[in-house]
Image (cartoon, rainbow, N blue to C red; front, side):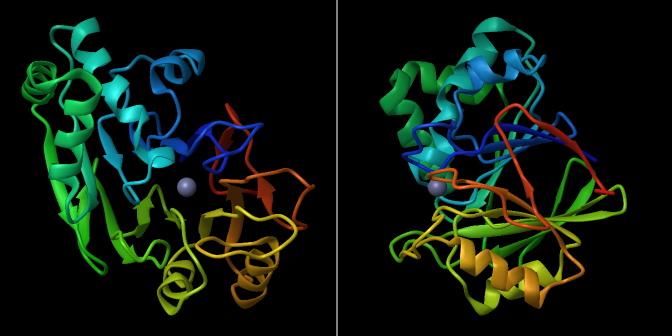
Length: 242
Ligand SMILES: [Zn+2]
């Protein structure tokens, strides 16, 4: 399994782009990065992502979709279809996002040409994405939003992704179900609400010693976490880690 990190910064990072990770050049985990720039910069076309998994509806995880969706159909009349998996409300959210970004006519054009397929998920839902089995986990992040994490089983790897999360029993279950985990670590020094801090990630690592940790979604960079891989923008990582 190959991971391409298109954005590894938290919402207001001054040094890294917003959240987006591409699995095997075909499955996007979140879409916060400026994908119309970052996919080509990573050597890929806007046609590459076939499925997008959205963890929640914050701008730093979703706003890259507007340019990806319309840019793809304008660049290629025969653009491949696109599937989006996300929390309950994803269809409505995407409609509003595209309406705001480009207006109703362009929203319809992009939606139709992409034959957009939207699957709305709740915690514990099992689904299939690009030939791989996956599970959604309800995450605790924003009380006003449905927030999900995911585990995808692919090429013998059980890859977990927290999206944005606080410590919770559901997060522990997600980590237990994964042998590799892409986790957010928004706070380096002090702990804060809505997100994981360095000490939270270290405690997760202690409770789940058999899981390999890959850290992303950082607001600042105060150095590595011992035993974990610190992801960087445009880095490509092959799993399983050695
Ligand atoms: Zn975020």
